[in-house]
Image (cartoon, rainbow, N blue to C red):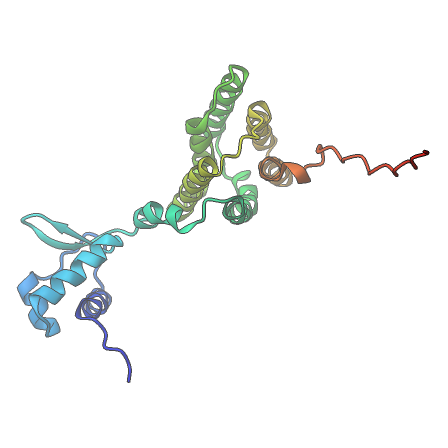
Length: 244
């Protein structure tokens, strides 16, 4: 016998179907709670529970004294919960880096033909700030985040911007929780300088290679034992016979 679906889950499904059937857009209001419960043939309590769960995942927004509205899609609910779905270990960080690398390396070449001089100037200023802070022994998380968001702005893709922001922030949180300390500040800053120089040259392939070098450096930081610069331990020496 199939398990009975809880009333609040039925309410969730019914509300989402109502939004789809009535072609409601972000910012559109839903009917009053009483009317909606009547239309869906359920109790107000079940409807209220369904609304609460859909609020929690960012589909609905209940405005005090105004009613219930369809909410614009964002990654906010994912953003708040995703870090806790990852284990605080190096493997989770490497998995996320693999996805982030594929996303940014795959799209950065498109920026070369669409970026304007003003945006290159913004990126150049951020890269210079990173270099200065690195020379002073300071980290530059704010500048790093702003750099990557500014870099993809010419593509005019809000969905991409939110993904880049999401991956960047979750990566930062995981990075902090794993205790990774191998971070060459100056090299990281110079990676961003190389990206700006490739943008100025207008060469998509050069830009992709610059981004590839940046992420390769991050990967080596996470796996220092696999870095080309890692020292290979000397092979064990044969034991000398002991003469008595």
